[in-house]
Image (cartoon, rainbow, N blue to C red; front, side):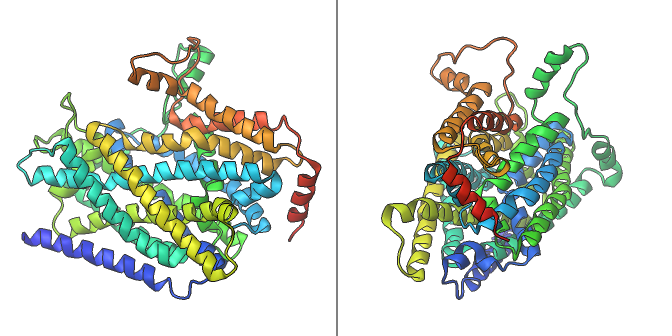
Amino acid sequence: MNPALLLDAIVIVAYFALVVGIGLWMSRGEKSVEGFALGNRQIAWWAVLASILAAEISAGTFFGAPGEGFALRNYTYIQLIIGYLLARVVVSAVFIPAYYRHGVVSIYEFLGTRFGPRTRRAASAVFLVTRLLASGTRLWVPTVLLVMIWKLTHDGVAATPIGEFWLTGGALAFVAVATAIYTTIGGIRAVIWTDVLQIVVLVCALAFSLWHLITHVGGWAAAKPHLLGAAVFDSGTQAGLGFWGNVKHVLEQEYTLWAAFLGSTFVTLATHGTDQDMVQRMLTAKNKRQSAFATILSGLADVPIQLCVLSIGILLAVYYGTSADATIPRDAHGAIVANKAFPHFILTAMPGGLRGLVLAGVLATAMGSLSTALNSLATSYVRDFHFRWFGEPATEAGRVRVFRFGTLLFALLLIAVGLATAWVSAMNPTLRIIPIILGIFGYTYGSLLGVFLVGLFTRGRGSEIGNLTAMSAGFLAVMYLSRLDDKVAAMFGGKGLPRAAWMPALEFPWWIFAGTLVTFLVAVCFRTPADRITATSEKNARP
């Protein structure tokens, strides 16, 4: 074997062994539901912070964000950080204290107390389906490296679509099984402490990648004009369009200041306030103050990471702009496929050993986001559905066994979604990653956030029937405003529902905002029954 490839293999195998070893070590003595799902609420704030980052920076970000920098040649994607930070303040001040006060394990238990069991189960079902699809899609992302390795080792001959599917499918199944082992045994404690290692590896991999890329474009002097001269802010408005013309123009763009202050804020409120996957690690902190501190600080830590990945994308555009490399993946028009530029650079321009470190960073993002998804999906399913359908075991050990069963169940389901995504990708190689992943959340999480806002910010509004009606209305509104019906109809040669010419086609940063607004406005039209108001008041009276 080539010495450089052998060194890469040693680094990757060592990483796998270390992650699984830490996960299994942390599983010792994990015998209670509170320990399995929340680590007995005794996790250090800095470990919670690292886990939040590991969950946010998935393999989709690792490849997708450089792809956005490559495609756009600017930093406008990072404008969304404004909303990330604003939303974290609200989550820390409102959502987290409420969850600690109510003592929830599944955050949808809060909705059960506030409104009733049907709202709780509906919200939990929305989370389960959405998270399953989103995390399954992310599971496929890092396997694009295998497809590129195949092409590079076969004289530039690409794998057939079927061959590509088998390559990626086998890889994602292996990663999922390895992650499921320590997650099933160790629960959230194993998840968080492996996340700490994974975020360290990820940051080292990104920092090295940026430094190595700078050296390949001629050093800092050559890179500086491209990085410092790249646009950061974009208002999204244009002279001569008039008021409504500019409103429509802004709503039909992905990365603008308006999307940062409004669209991105609502996206993060949904993902960090109503998503069990993210909130569950926040609830492992010792108290609500430490949880809030970790949540806000994770947003600040995300800024340099996003700057790094976008800088990588911009410099990749410079590097490949002067390169005649025939092995770089291109679309049918001869343009470089944006989300495959970074993987290609990793495989062709990095030295052995250090390349292995970066590949381990890719695995870190995949395993970090997958392990958290497995634990949260199992927690919501077991607490909100399984115990109701099949009864709750009498012993703590029996309850933990059910949680482990749920983890294995969702590992299999995530593999199935990942395989489906691999198949679609093999047939459509130019798909952009970030819009796909965020788009999945966009269709449903507005409905979820709208109901939570009614529960948190009103005392006597919202009911079982009203909430279900409102959530359905929010979902349908997003489908219509994003023109999903047009896209589905076009696949069968037809047309979607009629629209006025003035109506905008919302881009994905606005979907959750629209869904939340519709859901909230419909839900507040219904009055909360008196018994539910009393039950919530008793919970809120707790210190």
